[in-house]
Length: 293
Image 1 (cartoon, rainbow, N blue to C red):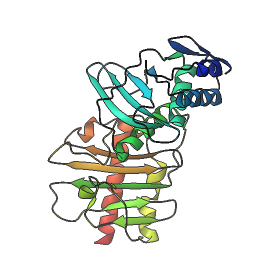
Image 2: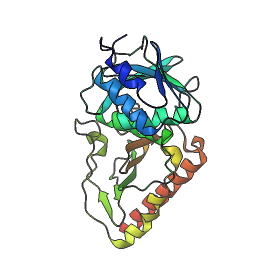
Image 3: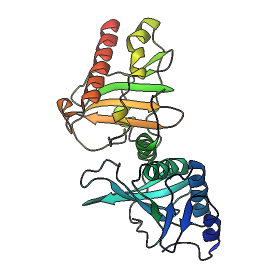
Image 4: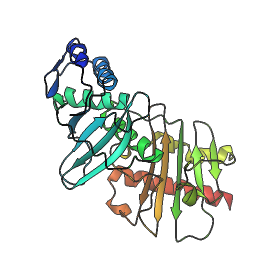
């Protein structure tokens, strides 16, 4: 087990209300506060104590849920942990996850009687993986936040939306929607910028109030299912041919990029609310382009 040789962390943890420690696990009572879980994580981080847990809510491609391991190994980010995860026949990582999102995860799982402890003995961390890029890290953080927070509405600072098809050799347009403005990105470089070191950076002119009114409702109708499922981000190299529905959602609590490729999943196979939202976005883009014609 990779952890600091001194035992001060055990004494510190034993002083937290609702939390008990043995040589193998840290028991967490159902009514343990979020603040005490934050305090627990800070102690573990300070003493470099890795831990593992099972998250039955995590969207898995195989058996339900995922087993997640957290460590300070290969972590250079303040108030964060390195994370790897896996389940039957799949594994992945290394992601950088904020301590706040880990606390949300543990608090939600404990409160809903999904777990009553985290493991600190013989924690398996997949250190052979390379660290994931910025886009994948923030999307994994957004996924955990979406699954485990008590969010009941989405108030985006901005919403980026549009479509990209590799079969379309003409111009394509991506839009950025804020609370009171609409912008257009028409430089036709989304498909190449997303692979760059800095990633995709939106720059473009503001459109008229009339065009803003066409799209404004999209920011209030974002389906919660988009936040609770695994989707590809912008940094993708999956297919030679692409037909992507593109979204970027930025709030004060999370930042997520989503690209849903019809070569991977046909529109008719999407969950109902996501399919309806895609159609609303498609209709808004069509109206905006007709308005420009």
